[in-house]
Length: 423
Image 1 (cartoon, rainbow, N blue to C red):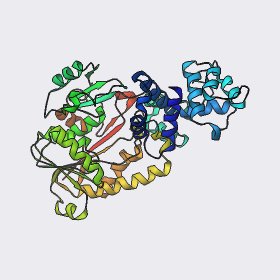
Image 2 (image 1 turned 45 degrees about the vertical axis):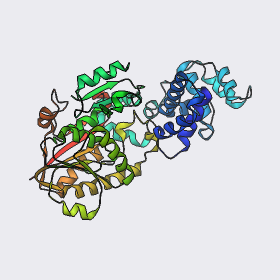
Image 3 (image 1 turned 135 degrees about the horizontal axis):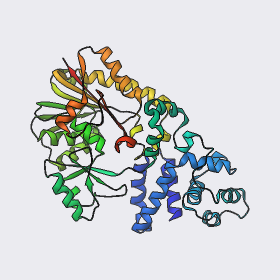
Image 4 (image 1 turned 135 degrees about the vertical axis):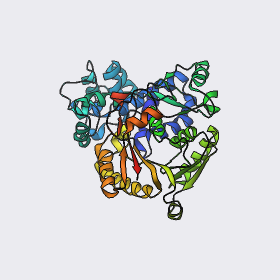
């Protein structure tokens, strides 16, 4: 099992694709080698090593191992010693290290310690890149450590109930019958929450399209579109269709929903998901200039779920924090501005442009909206609390015009939502 965790971690770190995608492929090829308990344990071990990468590197460096020599095997061994209290001798045998070798001596130096140490810098303690620490400090202020700690914890599995086919109460009962431990989400009226390691894709409730995995924050963003009663709604960056599914359900299959993207491959997946969910008023379209020109000023709602840094999803994707660079953020900001300008042309007077990111960085969120309004004086911000009262219900977590959701304060992924009305 330990060697399986090492092999999985090595695969996730050696490929350019996201870790969750590598995990799926690796498990598909290797799942018969392990029983269900072993599979769960080795996946947890590899993911913990990704989450704790900075701490493990700090400890191994302190023990005398250069960062260039800190391979997946040594990080798993260090994790077992520091987190689980495993004996260094057992790790030496598992890695087949020579007794009294430099690596063996280093692992023995870790014995009796834990992952925590008072001399660790904040970026190491919370496993974030050094360059992003000032941005998080600006964004979270006094809540910095609360939020960074929440980003390190595994996220729950949130599901959106497909109201085209069932109710939240009936979906909860169906999942309970499948031996799932499930409860309603505290904010979204169409959400259900399961534990971090829950799996529903092999159950009847998922297979029949009653539920769809979607973080509660993403569910809220889709509800704030207020799509019910609209003649035409455009999901401008639809991807694989997660928010299109939610918007289609909110529309009750009445009106026209257009899921757009630049990728035919992502849209092909969206078509399958929309069909399974029973969304019949949607069409999928690859974005191209001629279509945009023909539909200028015709959409009641245009959702821009913009490509972003994904810093709000780090509790689900621990490897993403090490893939992101400072130059990536600058490139994304330029792309977000360009997409907003193109999408704004589709909005009918009196219609709305809804800007959403799964980022917690101010420069991708509030700063982006400020810059957009300087370029487009015919758009104004509609305060979220009023829209929340109509579309979500219950207490709104903000009194500000735009919405910020975060793992520490709200128990969701990090999200930003701004609703702009064209006048």
